[in-house]
Length: 428
Length: 81
Image (cartoon, rainbow over all chains, first blue to last red; front, top):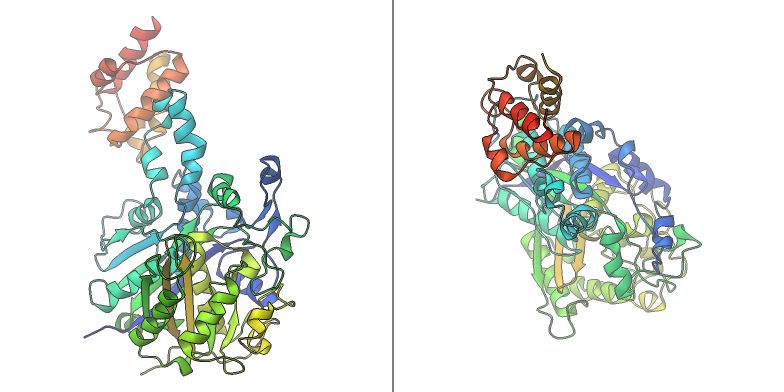
């Protein structure tokens, strides 16, 4: 029999929000975490704005020094901070150094989109090219491997269940949560730390700049650059950070008397196969619609039950197509469309971490009964206005709202899709 | 006690989980077995020694380093002390 899975811990580090409480404040205030960066200008980026988290402001920042992780990739830094925050938020302790206990019931799945490109660029490649290989030192592998974030948290917390890192471009975070959820649901783990982490070095962002998918029109107005669903959207704003969720079997959470933020009822991942309108860089509507429908079916939720959609909505020309896909998948348009917003409007597109950070935002909104504004879409794209009533787009913070059921989707290069369904937890 | 011994000990100390084991170490103490240094960190210890004394420790010499005394001997041999 399937186990029920709930969220009992949340940790986050996002642009403009170092920690869960700061993130709630950012979401409620609708303040942009996007800034102009001089290093990008000097490197002649087309897009000189972005979102970079400030690790020093996070409560768990001292752990980076304590563990000697200063030279490690930012995906380890960000995931460590978010992971420790989530773990302690769930009511667990960080083991004392030297502890010999192994927790075989807990696993870790923390992915990344571009991975440890920052360290490869800053150390591995230059030191190899200059024939200084030994100067990479002994920690280079653990500091620059894709699963470095999961492995670091595993070592610190003594987790003995699956410890891995996934990668599926901008769908990575959602995919990690769904993968971890499925592991608990089928009884292979009691709890999982699940999420994703993305570095913010120029070397992570230059490929997107080369592809001209990031906006070049808002370098003088950084906070206006990320404008999902707007007629003036001209490309996404790159960002990064991490979010980690503690997913736990309901029975265990109840037994511990843990805070339950939400129930994760189901999810689906698929690919459009890069056919029928889909390609390496564009989503197939058929694939997206199937994914959303499969997630609803997996969660035993009807389209009419969805109160709120946390969209992928990245501030590109694909936004109207995404809304059209939601309308088709749910068979709900006009005034009947659920409330929708895009967390990317506030913090940019955290690439692989986006799904994890935005799912965290969705859960916090459900738990605290508010919806954050999707900023910069006062000029709603006309193709979106044709599909749904403009009041369905949350443009001002809505307080005291009862969100019972939410859908969170992410889509990524490779024509990959993911959708998960969250419900407010009610006893019984 | 000579300076090289003290300096090499200080280098090793950076990589020790239990600093006390290094503080109490003698020339005969084994770096991995007695001082509980992670074997992967030998690479860093050798690099620090090379940088401190401006010497080049070849692979053959690295293989000879088991005890604190071995490390001191390599430094003295290479630096002509």
